Length: 186
Image (cartoon, rainbow, N blue to C red):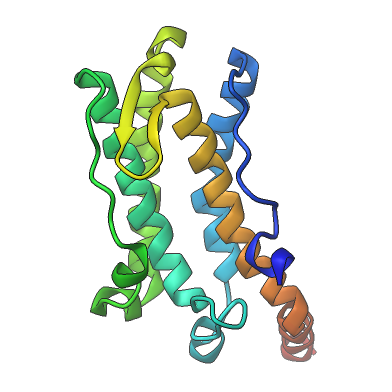
């Protein structure tokens, strides 16, 4: 069950990162919307409503969760850059995943993720190395610098995309889609 829940491994932040590592993390954040869109491409309603693991969220809930989470991350960065160690507001992810909008068509959340990441990238590119040392206070996990937050959300996107791509692989959905496409071309 461990690899189904953590297909890219559990989040393990480095206490310090270099600017080169920071740029790689930013690239992962930039790539996440495109990779998430590709991960759900051609999935039908039944597939979108399949849980990625027993007791886990459906693919649809995962797709809606990622922009919810990354919108919070973007706001946390802005708070961290404009306030002195602000205490950020946690949210109940599981309850958010049960709200009506988590049952909506996935395209709106894919579009939202792209927009949030475009704005977030502008902020990230304007940051100086010392800006990443600024801190926020998370009531549940304590004080953390923006380098750690950057590591978390670079991992977060990969983590949830892997939930979907590993499910596709286990279910053989890509093979079935390829066979359908070959039949259509004949």
